[in-house]
Length: 513
Image (cartoon, rainbow, N blue to C red; front, side):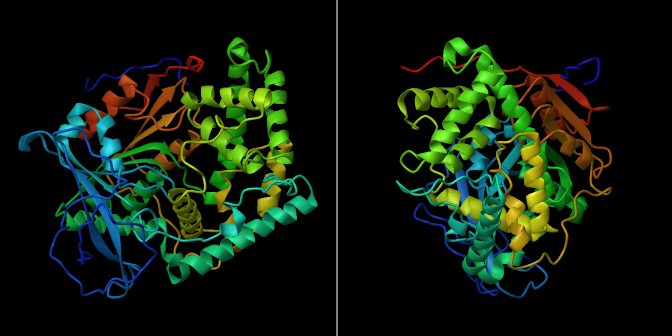
């Protein structure tokens, strides 16, 4: 971190069918849309699916669809529908700056409700200036969702009396079992998604975004992407630099192949877990897991070993690792994780470790399917040997790593190969604003620095003393939020990179009775 922290206070015809969604609309498998089924130059906006929350009055959200080619290289071929949502700008016509497309990440995240949920957190000047546009990228949500069926048993819960299941291979038989799971997952995705599989790439999704732009009648779009959304935004800038107005990339995925990114993330998760152990130890009077990081780690391993040997109500080692992975990315989840560890060790219950949304629910299944499909359609795949070498490398760093995020491992057995490599950034695009938390384990800050080099003139806004994923209009930091708002609304590009002081680690939440 530079010696001086500076606070900034700059501001306190791809379109064919367009059919309204209704509250009864459900996710459907990939299906053909007749190329000639045209309905005019713009989407017919109407009611939204039940998954889209209503914004506070007087704002309202409306939804529609835009039809795009499954394969943009064959514009007269099969089409699919992209679901789009819109909350209009609340300011005067003179304040309006156009449309702001938003994406929450993934790959696999549904963006349709994000127009409402993210807009509610934006600074007021941005809400007044922009129509906020959410969309489900192809393969997700209501946009021709991918279907991987059983996904190699990813959603199987261990039955009572069954052999212990551990997602982390510790020996050669375990490694063979791990690779077999990836092979079966790839086969299930090929069977379930079929001929659409190679077309669920970030490059094709960026072309869908430009179809949405054209359908809305906008010469240029502004864009806010978080996590994987940064990768998507950089891909859009690479293909359509002249159609970009403002580009905000928050919690940045670096310009490397997906498996390399997954491994980088897994290493960062180990560092973050050590920080967590130290935090729990400092609050031993609250959690009772140990007064030193070593003692907390031992309590953590007792929990995991116990759930590996004897799952509780289907909650075993894989589910535990998923809960830990989720908690490590946001410090506000650490209290619940500490309470969950204590409750298991004291009472043998796992209720406080379970996430609110079940991992094997319909939305999660679609997310997991789209996640693999997009990563494997985007670029080079690892070999099985590389996958095992990287897992062994992680185990040398720590005998018990968290492998939940190694999603691109299944690409080693994927049934299709990318037809083109994803391009990121362009010197012809306008200067972008990149935002990063200094200790984010989900998208380590090195990725932001690397991606920034593909976008000349871009600036990096770093939130120091912060350990969470997602920064702008998320962490409540006035330095970050005012800097980004000044860029979005007034076009103010900082003279250099911006350094904001973050909150540090939180205090534990009050203990629940």
